[in-house]
Image (cartoon, rainbow, N blue to C red; front, side, top):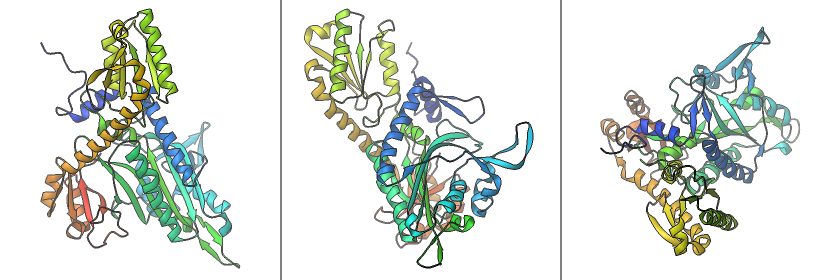
Length: 470
Protein backbone atom coordinates (compact mmCIF):
# COMPACT_ATOMS: atom_id res chain seq x y z
CA UNK A 1 0.00 0.00 0.00
CA UNK A 2 1.34 3.43 -0.97
CA UNK A 3 2.26 5.68 1.93
CA UNK A 4 -0.14 8.60 2.40
CA UNK A 5 1.46 11.97 1.55
CA UNK A 6 2.33 14.29 4.41
CA UNK A 7 0.49 17.13 2.65
CA UNK A 8 -2.52 17.17 0.37
CA UNK A 9 -1.02 17.50 -3.13
CA UNK A 10 -1.40 20.98 -4.61
CA UNK A 11 -2.98 19.58 -7.78
CA UNK A 12 -5.69 17.84 -5.74
CA UNK A 13 -6.74 20.73 -3.51
CA UNK A 14 -4.58 23.85 -3.32
CA UNK A 15 -6.46 25.48 -0.39
CA UNK A 16 -6.24 22.22 1.61
CA UNK A 17 -2.52 21.97 0.78
CA UNK A 18 -2.06 25.53 2.09
CA UNK A 19 -3.81 24.77 5.37
CA UNK A 20 -1.98 21.45 5.75
CA UNK A 21 1.36 23.16 5.29
CA UNK A 22 0.61 25.87 7.85
CA UNK A 23 -0.27 23.17 10.37
CA UNK A 24 2.46 20.61 9.60
CA UNK A 25 5.25 23.19 9.32
CA UNK A 26 4.09 24.72 12.62
CA UNK A 27 3.61 28.21 11.21
CA UNK A 28 0.34 29.23 12.84
CA UNK A 29 -2.91 28.12 14.48
CA UNK A 30 -6.40 29.55 14.44
CA UNK A 31 -7.06 31.87 17.38
CA UNK A 32 -9.94 31.51 19.84
CA UNK A 33 -11.95 34.33 18.24
CA UNK A 34 -13.10 33.66 14.69
CA UNK A 35 -10.71 35.18 12.17
CA UNK A 36 -7.77 35.58 14.55
CA UNK A 37 -4.52 33.63 14.40
CA UNK A 38 -1.75 32.52 16.71
CA UNK A 39 1.59 32.83 14.92
CA UNK A 40 3.90 30.07 16.11
CA UNK A 41 7.65 30.66 16.61
CA UNK A 42 8.78 29.37 13.20
CA UNK A 43 6.12 31.42 11.42
CA UNK A 44 6.91 34.46 13.53
CA UNK A 45 10.58 33.99 12.68
CA UNK A 46 9.68 34.49 9.01
CA UNK A 47 7.81 37.67 9.90
CA UNK A 48 10.70 38.92 12.04
CA UNK A 49 13.12 38.52 9.14
CA UNK A 50 10.66 40.37 6.89
CA UNK A 51 10.45 43.12 9.50
CA UNK A 52 14.22 43.45 9.72
CA UNK A 53 14.70 43.69 5.97
CA UNK A 54 11.78 46.07 5.50
CA UNK A 55 12.66 48.25 8.47
CA UNK A 56 16.16 48.83 7.13
CA UNK A 57 14.76 49.91 3.75
CA UNK A 58 12.12 52.16 5.35
CA UNK A 59 14.73 53.92 7.47
CA UNK A 60 16.96 54.33 4.42
CA UNK A 61 13.98 56.09 2.81
CA UNK A 62 14.11 58.62 5.64
CA UNK A 63 11.13 57.51 7.74
CA UNK A 64 11.34 57.17 11.51
CA UNK A 65 9.45 54.66 13.62
CA UNK A 66 6.79 55.83 16.07
CA UNK A 67 3.71 54.37 17.73
CA UNK A 68 0.11 55.58 17.89
CA UNK A 69 -2.78 54.22 19.99
CA UNK A 70 -4.88 51.34 18.70
CA UNK A 71 -8.05 53.00 20.05
CA UNK A 72 -9.36 55.78 17.83
CA UNK A 73 -12.34 58.05 18.62
CA UNK A 74 -15.12 57.23 16.17
CA UNK A 75 -15.48 60.93 15.35
CA UNK A 76 -12.00 60.88 13.79
CA UNK A 77 -13.07 58.39 11.14
CA UNK A 78 -16.12 60.38 10.16
CA UNK A 79 -14.03 63.41 9.22
CA UNK A 80 -13.06 61.90 5.86
CA UNK A 81 -16.29 60.63 4.28
CA UNK A 82 -14.84 58.27 1.66
CA UNK A 83 -12.48 56.76 4.21
CA UNK A 84 -15.14 55.92 6.79
CA UNK A 85 -17.47 54.61 4.09
CA UNK A 86 -14.78 52.31 2.77
CA UNK A 87 -13.95 50.85 6.17
CA UNK A 88 -17.40 50.85 7.82
CA UNK A 89 -18.18 47.13 7.20
CA UNK A 90 -14.84 46.08 8.71
CA UNK A 91 -14.81 48.18 11.88
CA UNK A 92 -14.67 46.75 15.39
CA UNK A 93 -16.24 49.32 17.74
CA UNK A 94 -15.90 49.47 21.54
CA UNK A 95 -18.98 50.89 23.24
CA UNK A 96 -18.33 49.96 26.89
CA UNK A 97 -15.26 50.28 29.11
CA UNK A 98 -14.77 49.94 32.87
CA UNK A 99 -18.30 48.60 33.19
CA UNK A 100 -19.85 51.76 31.75
CA UNK A 101 -21.10 52.89 28.36
CA UNK A 102 -18.59 55.23 26.78
CA UNK A 103 -19.51 58.81 25.95
CA UNK A 104 -18.13 58.24 22.46
CA UNK A 105 -17.61 54.85 20.80
CA UNK A 106 -14.00 53.88 20.14
CA UNK A 107 -12.86 52.17 16.96
CA UNK A 108 -10.13 49.52 17.15
CA UNK A 109 -7.48 50.64 14.64
CA UNK A 110 -8.26 49.42 11.08
CA UNK A 111 -5.53 51.76 9.77
CA UNK A 112 -4.14 54.97 11.24
CA UNK A 113 -4.61 57.78 8.72
CA UNK A 114 -7.11 59.53 10.96
CA UNK A 115 -5.33 59.41 14.30
CA UNK A 116 -1.95 60.17 12.77
CA UNK A 117 -3.38 63.18 10.97
CA UNK A 118 -4.77 64.44 14.25
CA UNK A 119 -1.17 64.68 15.44
CA UNK A 120 0.33 65.77 12.15
CA UNK A 121 -1.93 68.81 12.36
CA UNK A 122 -0.26 69.66 15.68
CA UNK A 123 3.29 68.87 14.67
CA UNK A 124 3.39 70.60 11.29
CA UNK A 125 3.54 74.37 11.51
CA UNK A 126 5.89 75.60 8.81
CA UNK A 127 7.67 74.36 5.71
CA UNK A 128 10.64 73.60 7.97
CA UNK A 129 8.63 70.73 9.52
CA UNK A 130 8.30 69.03 6.14
CA UNK A 131 8.63 66.41 4.94
CA UNK A 132 7.34 64.55 7.99
CA UNK A 133 8.05 60.84 7.49
CA UNK A 134 6.62 58.41 10.05
CA UNK A 135 6.29 54.62 10.14
CA UNK A 136 4.82 52.32 12.75
CA UNK A 137 4.86 48.56 13.26
CA UNK A 138 1.55 47.58 14.76
CA UNK A 139 -1.49 45.34 14.73
CA UNK A 140 -4.78 46.30 13.09
CA UNK A 141 -8.30 44.89 13.24
CA UNK A 142 -10.65 44.54 10.28
CA UNK A 143 -13.67 42.34 10.85
CA UNK A 144 -13.11 39.64 8.24
CA UNK A 145 -16.10 37.67 6.95
CA UNK A 146 -14.07 34.99 5.13
CA UNK A 147 -10.91 34.54 7.21
CA UNK A 148 -7.86 32.59 6.07
CA UNK A 149 -4.67 32.34 8.09
CA UNK A 150 -2.08 34.95 7.05
CA UNK A 151 -4.13 36.00 3.99
CA UNK A 152 -7.23 37.48 5.57
CA UNK A 153 -7.52 37.63 9.34
CA UNK A 154 -9.52 39.84 11.67
CA UNK A 155 -6.33 40.93 13.40
CA UNK A 156 -3.01 41.05 11.60
CA UNK A 157 0.45 42.59 11.94
CA UNK A 158 1.86 45.17 9.57
CA UNK A 159 3.81 48.33 9.08
CA UNK A 160 2.07 51.52 8.01
CA UNK A 161 3.95 54.55 6.80
CA UNK A 162 2.43 58.03 6.82
CA UNK A 163 4.06 61.12 5.38
CA UNK A 164 3.32 64.81 4.86
CA UNK A 165 4.95 66.90 2.11
CA UNK A 166 4.94 70.51 0.95
CA UNK A 167 3.95 69.74 -2.66
CA UNK A 168 2.00 67.26 -4.73
CA UNK A 169 5.16 66.43 -6.67
CA UNK A 170 7.11 65.59 -3.50
CA UNK A 171 4.34 63.31 -2.20
CA UNK A 172 3.95 61.55 -5.56
CA UNK A 173 7.69 60.99 -5.83
CA UNK A 174 7.87 59.58 -2.30
CA UNK A 175 4.94 57.19 -2.78
CA UNK A 176 6.58 55.92 -5.96
CA UNK A 177 9.93 55.49 -4.25
CA UNK A 178 8.34 53.38 -1.49
CA UNK A 179 6.56 51.35 -4.17
CA UNK A 180 9.72 50.54 -6.11
CA UNK A 181 12.82 50.99 -3.95
CA UNK A 182 11.38 49.70 -0.67
CA UNK A 183 8.60 47.23 -1.48
CA UNK A 184 9.60 46.19 -4.98
CA UNK A 185 13.24 45.68 -4.06
CA UNK A 186 12.37 43.68 -0.93
CA UNK A 187 9.85 41.40 -2.61
CA UNK A 188 12.03 40.72 -5.62
CA UNK A 189 15.45 40.42 -4.01
CA UNK A 190 14.60 39.01 -0.58
CA UNK A 191 11.30 37.15 -0.97
CA UNK A 192 12.28 35.97 -4.44
CA UNK A 193 8.78 36.72 -5.73
CA UNK A 194 8.28 38.21 -9.18
CA UNK A 195 5.83 41.03 -8.46
CA UNK A 196 4.08 43.22 -11.01
CA UNK A 197 4.11 46.91 -10.09
CA UNK A 198 1.11 48.91 -11.25
CA UNK A 199 -1.63 51.30 -10.22
CA UNK A 200 -5.07 50.39 -8.96
CA UNK A 201 -8.20 51.39 -10.83
CA UNK A 202 -10.51 53.97 -9.27
CA UNK A 203 -12.77 51.11 -8.12
CA UNK A 204 -9.93 49.32 -6.32
CA UNK A 205 -8.24 52.42 -4.91
CA UNK A 206 -7.71 52.82 -1.16
CA UNK A 207 -10.59 54.67 0.49
CA UNK A 208 -9.64 58.35 0.65
CA UNK A 209 -6.68 58.14 -1.75
CA UNK A 210 -6.25 59.85 -5.12
CA UNK A 211 -3.97 57.07 -6.37
CA UNK A 212 -2.97 53.61 -5.15
CA UNK A 213 0.19 51.86 -6.32
CA UNK A 214 0.19 48.09 -5.87
CA UNK A 215 2.45 45.05 -6.08
CA UNK A 216 0.69 41.93 -7.37
CA UNK A 217 2.10 38.39 -7.31
CA UNK A 218 0.90 35.18 -8.93
CA UNK A 219 0.47 32.31 -6.51
CA UNK A 220 1.11 28.66 -7.29
CA UNK A 221 -2.50 28.11 -8.35
CA UNK A 222 -2.51 31.05 -10.76
CA UNK A 223 -4.49 33.42 -8.51
CA UNK A 224 -3.24 36.90 -7.63
CA UNK A 225 -2.28 38.22 -4.22
CA UNK A 226 -1.88 41.91 -3.43
CA UNK A 227 1.44 41.97 -1.59
CA UNK A 228 1.55 45.64 -0.66
CA UNK A 229 0.31 49.12 -1.55
CA UNK A 230 1.52 52.71 -1.54
CA UNK A 231 -1.11 55.46 -1.62
CA UNK A 232 -1.12 59.08 -2.66
CA UNK A 233 -3.67 60.72 -0.36
CA UNK A 234 -3.57 64.13 -1.99
CA UNK A 235 -4.94 66.73 0.42
CA UNK A 236 -8.06 64.79 1.43
CA UNK A 237 -6.99 64.04 4.99
CA UNK A 238 -5.12 67.32 5.33
CA UNK A 239 -8.35 69.21 4.67
CA UNK A 240 -10.34 66.96 6.99
CA UNK A 241 -7.89 67.50 9.86
CA UNK A 242 -6.68 70.99 8.91
CA UNK A 243 -3.07 69.85 8.50
CA UNK A 244 -1.38 72.94 7.08
CA UNK A 245 2.00 74.61 6.98
CA UNK A 246 2.91 78.28 6.80
CA UNK A 247 4.36 79.70 3.63
CA UNK A 248 6.34 82.91 3.61
CA UNK A 249 4.18 85.47 5.29
CA UNK A 250 0.86 84.54 6.90
CA UNK A 251 -0.45 82.33 4.10
CA UNK A 252 -0.99 78.64 4.92
CA UNK A 253 -1.18 75.63 2.61
CA UNK A 254 -2.55 72.14 3.11
CA UNK A 255 0.08 69.40 3.10
CA UNK A 256 0.15 66.59 0.55
CA UNK A 257 0.28 63.09 1.98
CA UNK A 258 1.06 59.44 1.42
CA UNK A 259 0.42 56.21 3.29
CA UNK A 260 1.78 52.76 2.57
CA UNK A 261 1.84 49.31 4.13
CA UNK A 262 2.65 45.62 3.98
CA UNK A 263 1.49 42.95 6.40
CA UNK A 264 1.72 39.34 7.56
CA UNK A 265 -0.15 38.58 4.33
CA UNK A 266 3.37 38.39 2.85
CA UNK A 267 3.92 35.18 4.83
CA UNK A 268 0.92 33.67 3.04
CA UNK A 269 2.30 34.93 -0.27
CA UNK A 270 5.66 33.33 0.49
CA UNK A 271 3.99 29.98 1.19
CA UNK A 272 1.83 29.99 -1.94
CA UNK A 273 4.56 31.32 -4.23
CA UNK A 274 7.36 28.91 -3.31
CA UNK A 275 5.79 25.96 -1.51
CA UNK A 276 5.53 22.54 -3.14
CA UNK A 277 4.08 19.14 -2.27
CA UNK A 278 6.92 18.54 0.19
CA UNK A 279 6.33 21.76 2.12
CA UNK A 280 7.63 25.29 2.29
CA UNK A 281 10.69 26.56 0.41
CA UNK A 282 12.18 29.59 2.15
CA UNK A 283 14.35 32.00 0.12
CA UNK A 284 17.89 31.85 1.54
CA UNK A 285 18.20 35.64 1.94
CA UNK A 286 15.06 35.62 4.08
CA UNK A 287 15.52 32.36 5.99
CA UNK A 288 16.17 32.65 9.71
CA UNK A 289 17.71 29.17 9.33
CA UNK A 290 19.63 28.82 6.07
CA UNK A 291 21.16 25.45 6.91
CA UNK A 292 20.55 22.71 9.44
CA UNK A 293 23.25 20.23 10.38
CA UNK A 294 21.71 16.88 11.34
CA UNK A 295 23.33 14.08 13.30
CA UNK A 296 22.04 10.83 11.84
CA UNK A 297 22.94 8.74 14.91
CA UNK A 298 23.81 9.46 18.52
CA UNK A 299 27.46 8.58 18.10
CA UNK A 300 29.76 10.79 20.24
CA UNK A 301 32.06 11.48 17.30
CA UNK A 302 29.11 12.37 15.05
CA UNK A 303 27.63 14.72 17.66
CA UNK A 304 30.98 16.42 18.10
CA UNK A 305 31.42 16.81 14.35
CA UNK A 306 27.96 18.30 13.65
CA UNK A 307 28.54 20.86 16.38
CA UNK A 308 31.95 21.67 14.90
CA UNK A 309 30.41 22.07 11.45
CA UNK A 310 27.71 24.33 12.89
CA UNK A 311 30.33 26.59 14.47
CA UNK A 312 32.31 26.77 11.23
CA UNK A 313 29.25 27.68 9.17
CA UNK A 314 28.17 30.30 11.69
CA UNK A 315 31.64 31.84 11.51
CA UNK A 316 31.27 31.91 7.72
CA UNK A 317 28.07 33.96 8.05
CA UNK A 318 25.57 31.16 7.45
CA UNK A 319 22.48 31.20 9.70
CA UNK A 320 22.66 27.64 10.99
CA UNK A 321 21.00 25.28 13.47
CA UNK A 322 22.53 22.06 14.76
CA UNK A 323 19.99 19.25 15.14
CA UNK A 324 21.53 16.60 17.39
CA UNK A 325 18.21 15.32 18.80
CA UNK A 326 19.05 11.70 18.13
CA UNK A 327 16.30 10.52 20.47
CA UNK A 328 13.97 11.48 17.59
CA UNK A 329 14.25 9.29 14.46
CA UNK A 330 16.39 10.86 11.74
CA UNK A 331 13.74 10.38 9.05
CA UNK A 332 11.16 12.30 11.03
CA UNK A 333 13.55 15.15 11.68
CA UNK A 334 14.54 15.33 8.01
CA UNK A 335 10.88 15.50 6.96
CA UNK A 336 10.17 18.22 9.53
CA UNK A 337 13.01 20.41 8.23
CA UNK A 338 11.89 19.78 4.67
CA UNK A 339 8.34 20.86 5.58
CA UNK A 340 9.76 24.03 7.12
CA UNK A 341 11.63 24.77 3.90
CA UNK A 342 15.13 25.24 5.30
CA UNK A 343 17.25 25.73 2.17
CA UNK A 344 20.05 23.28 3.04
CA UNK A 345 20.41 20.16 5.15
CA UNK A 346 23.84 18.78 6.02
CA UNK A 347 23.44 15.17 7.17
CA UNK A 348 26.29 13.47 9.02
CA UNK A 349 26.58 9.84 10.12
CA UNK A 350 29.41 7.46 11.14
CA UNK A 351 30.15 6.44 7.54
CA UNK A 352 30.32 10.09 6.48
CA UNK A 353 32.95 10.71 9.15
CA UNK A 354 35.04 7.86 7.83
CA UNK A 355 34.94 9.40 4.35
CA UNK A 356 35.38 13.00 5.48
CA UNK A 357 32.10 13.89 3.77
CA UNK A 358 28.56 14.96 4.59
CA UNK A 359 25.37 14.51 2.59
CA UNK A 360 24.12 17.87 1.32
CA UNK A 361 20.37 18.05 0.61
CA UNK A 362 19.12 21.10 -1.29
CA UNK A 363 15.51 21.92 -0.51
CA UNK A 364 14.99 24.50 -3.27
CA UNK A 365 16.63 22.92 -6.29
CA UNK A 366 16.26 19.37 -4.99
CA UNK A 367 18.70 16.50 -4.87
CA UNK A 368 21.35 15.20 -2.49
CA UNK A 369 25.06 14.73 -2.95
CA UNK A 370 28.11 13.98 -0.79
CA UNK A 371 30.42 16.94 -0.24
CA UNK A 372 33.69 17.42 1.60
CA UNK A 373 33.17 18.48 5.20
CA UNK A 374 36.28 20.66 5.06
CA UNK A 375 34.88 22.58 2.07
CA UNK A 376 31.37 23.25 3.41
CA UNK A 377 32.01 26.75 4.77
CA UNK A 378 33.36 27.91 1.41
CA UNK A 379 30.74 26.06 -0.64
CA UNK A 380 27.44 26.95 0.99
CA UNK A 381 27.22 30.76 0.47
CA UNK A 382 27.40 30.31 -3.30
CA UNK A 383 24.79 27.55 -3.27
CA UNK A 384 22.45 29.71 -1.21
CA UNK A 385 22.71 32.50 -3.76
CA UNK A 386 22.09 30.05 -6.62
CA UNK A 387 18.92 28.83 -4.95
CA UNK A 388 17.77 32.39 -4.19
CA UNK A 389 18.03 33.20 -7.89
CA UNK A 390 16.25 29.95 -8.82
CA UNK A 391 13.17 30.84 -6.76
CA UNK A 392 12.84 34.23 -8.43
CA UNK A 393 13.32 32.68 -11.84
CA UNK A 394 10.66 30.04 -11.17
CA UNK A 395 8.26 32.72 -9.90
CA UNK A 396 8.79 34.79 -13.05
CA UNK A 397 8.48 31.79 -15.37
CA UNK A 398 5.20 30.78 -13.75
CA UNK A 399 3.73 34.26 -14.16
CA UNK A 400 4.86 34.60 -17.76
CA UNK A 401 3.69 31.13 -18.79
CA UNK A 402 0.26 31.57 -17.20
CA UNK A 403 -0.44 35.11 -18.42
CA UNK A 404 -2.21 35.47 -21.76
CA UNK A 405 -3.12 38.42 -23.98
CA UNK A 406 -6.90 38.72 -24.38
CA UNK A 407 -9.23 41.05 -26.24
CA UNK A 408 -12.70 40.45 -24.80
CA UNK A 409 -14.34 40.19 -21.39
CA UNK A 410 -15.15 36.54 -22.09
CA UNK A 411 -11.51 35.76 -22.90
CA UNK A 412 -10.39 37.65 -19.80
CA UNK A 413 -12.69 35.60 -17.55
CA UNK A 414 -11.47 32.39 -19.20
CA UNK A 415 -7.82 33.37 -18.67
CA UNK A 416 -8.51 34.08 -15.00
CA UNK A 417 -9.67 30.49 -14.48
CA UNK A 418 -6.06 29.28 -14.59
CA UNK A 419 -3.88 32.41 -14.48
CA UNK A 420 -3.87 36.06 -15.50
CA UNK A 421 -5.17 37.94 -18.50
CA UNK A 422 -3.81 41.13 -20.05
CA UNK A 423 -6.35 43.30 -21.80
CA UNK A 424 -6.26 46.85 -23.11
CA UNK A 425 -7.69 49.18 -20.48
CA UNK A 426 -9.17 51.28 -23.29
CA UNK A 427 -11.15 48.21 -24.41
CA UNK A 428 -12.13 47.09 -20.90
CA UNK A 429 -12.76 50.30 -18.95
CA UNK A 430 -14.86 50.64 -15.78
CA UNK A 431 -17.88 49.00 -17.43
CA UNK A 432 -15.93 45.90 -18.35
CA UNK A 433 -14.33 45.88 -14.92
CA UNK A 434 -17.78 45.78 -13.33
CA UNK A 435 -18.84 42.89 -15.59
CA UNK A 436 -15.74 40.91 -14.67
CA UNK A 437 -16.40 41.52 -10.98
CA UNK A 438 -19.78 39.80 -11.37
CA UNK A 439 -17.82 36.68 -12.35
CA UNK A 440 -15.38 36.91 -9.44
CA UNK A 441 -12.59 38.38 -11.57
CA UNK A 442 -10.93 41.68 -10.66
CA UNK A 443 -8.57 44.14 -12.27
CA UNK A 444 -5.49 43.68 -10.14
CA UNK A 445 -3.65 46.67 -11.57
CA UNK A 446 -3.04 48.81 -14.63
CA UNK A 447 0.40 48.84 -16.21
CA UNK A 448 1.81 50.79 -19.13
CA UNK A 449 2.38 49.01 -22.42
CA UNK A 450 6.08 48.58 -21.58
CA UNK A 451 5.28 47.14 -18.14
CA UNK A 452 6.09 50.29 -16.17
CA UNK A 453 3.71 52.08 -13.82
CA UNK A 454 1.51 54.55 -15.75
CA UNK A 455 1.02 58.11 -14.55
CA UNK A 456 -2.75 58.02 -15.08
CA UNK A 457 -5.45 55.38 -15.53
CA UNK A 458 -6.19 56.50 -19.07
CA UNK A 459 -2.65 56.85 -20.34
CA UNK A 460 -2.42 55.64 -23.93
CA UNK A 461 -1.50 51.97 -24.21
CA UNK A 462 -2.42 51.02 -20.64
CA UNK A 463 -3.01 47.34 -20.01
CA UNK A 464 -5.21 45.87 -17.26
CA UNK A 465 -4.05 42.73 -15.44
CA UNK A 466 -7.11 40.65 -14.57
CA UNK A 467 -7.25 37.62 -12.30
CA UNK A 468 -9.06 35.84 -9.53
CA UNK A 469 -7.55 36.96 -6.27
CA UNK A 470 -7.12 36.04 -2.64
